[in-house]
Image 1 (cartoon, rainbow, N blue to C red):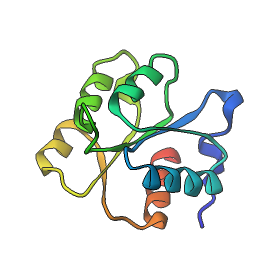
Image 2: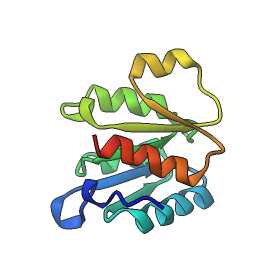
Image 3: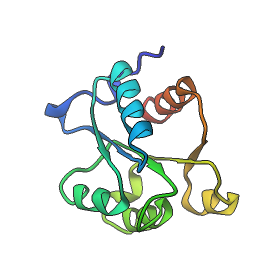
Image 4: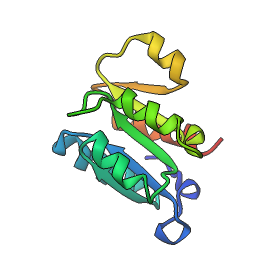
Length: 131
């Protein structure tokens, strides 16, 4: 496994990783895998609306975002975030089985195609958080 601890210290530093995933099995698996490798406060919500509410008070260091969500989809959440002051610089890793490539170029997002290997996810997180 990878050691990427310096990127996302702990609750006291105010650094948080936010996972937006509507499948509870996948969401909890991601939280466990990330917390095993990164010293960081990992937050999990199951909808774009819950993420919007949370991001009124918490600015994530990294957003892991499912595309297919109930209510608003992942790209609608990205639109909201990119139009919010300070939100344009938050790194986003979009997780999806299908998304037209044009959207990736428009939003300057990294994408992880589902199903994915946890090692690949951790490697991408390391690349994003440890420039």
